[in-house]
Length: 208
Image 1 (tube, rainbow, N blue to C red):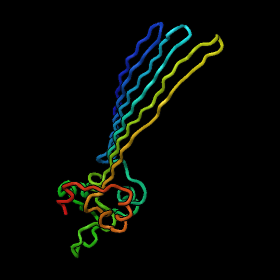
Image 2: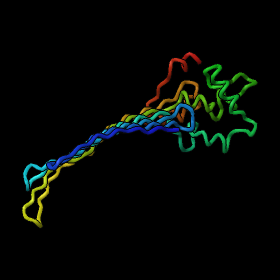
Image 3: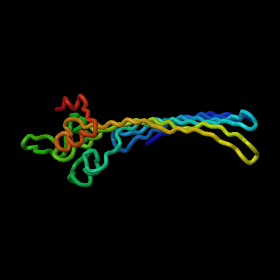
Image 4: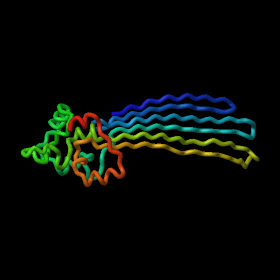
């Protein structure tokens, strides 16, 4: 489900024109705790200084906020690997949800040793634990636009000068909560910690 709203203001006369717009798009993902928000500002204008010289400019700014983008590859954050390989056909997803909502812990359908007391996941986490505790988030700002001038030398020749800019900055965060299979699998954790930022919530620490 998503929404898209925008507003545009413009004006013109015999010398030039301008436009100023804003748009906001919000998309809610099909999985829990997932959404993307996009904000776009844009401006454009042109003005005739003389009969031979005109100037113009255009600028855009976009801000994108992502939460809970879906996992991919062969790892616990890609829930499709649960459905297609490791889950038994009698796993009740609603029971998994109720167990997480009730305890706030990684109550999974595949304990390492339920009889022996090893109540930790052996292969995959509870999917609602994954979506609510091991989620990622990101933010990106992008700026792009140009400005310039046109000079009409003759009726058939125009000289144009223009400068342009296109740049962005981005922050990405990923987390594995204490009690997740990635924390229990020490060799995998060691390899991942070299390239990912690992954080844990207070609830995850209390759950252990």
